[in-house]
Image 1 (cartoon, one colour):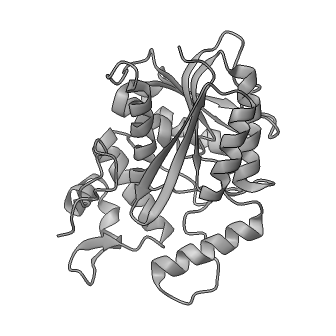
Image 2 (cartoon, helix red, strand yellow; image 1 turned 30 degrees about the horizontal axis):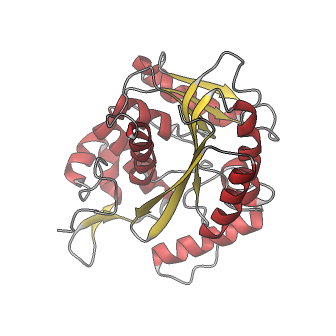
Length: 301
């Protein structure tokens, strides 16, 4: 039996090995993709998109009571444990002042690029009762996210969706003059071009399959807006920081995932330049992958 995934956050519900019998009872179709590996433990082949999608569907139903979760094959299929970690680290950030995690709908979160999967708002609300707004520039992604909400009517009053009509903006067009948010969160497009995204995916597939396969199998799917943007992650977060200044009085904490460690010095330098009152870097590790959350605010209140 494999050990606890100790690199995950202590409140993460996915620290223990997957109980596939339990998960198959939630989503029977998953059984076709589960096998015993060389270490005599049950697993799935994570390079098969359908297998990952069914695993996610089962995890979201079993742990978060999300019914009939599904995404189109063309969209990014997120790893649930890692997504949950980001939510829990935000909870820690909000708890720093009082020592208690604030729960309930008085806490309002804004997820930039919620995508078709809507995972951050779903986990944020189910874990802490937070009210969430998910945004995206892709209309089809938002329509799928709405289908998920339609299958879970108890969420309709606590998770809202809003389309960003202009890819040059992040907070503009989304945050109204009267709006106040406790935090923002974002998993930005990492690559700077489609070619770069495909190369990255070939590497990922090779690592998962331990094979020489050259054909790009977009095993986690991904629309353009999910995987790449001009200038990549650095350009996207730079734009976010500049725009955050305009909404500094309406948001307590701005946060964003940063995949590439080399981008941090430039981003923290820019935050100093725009006079952020406080900047934090929070390390997250899921297995061999290390990521980090960059968090900043303009007020010490």
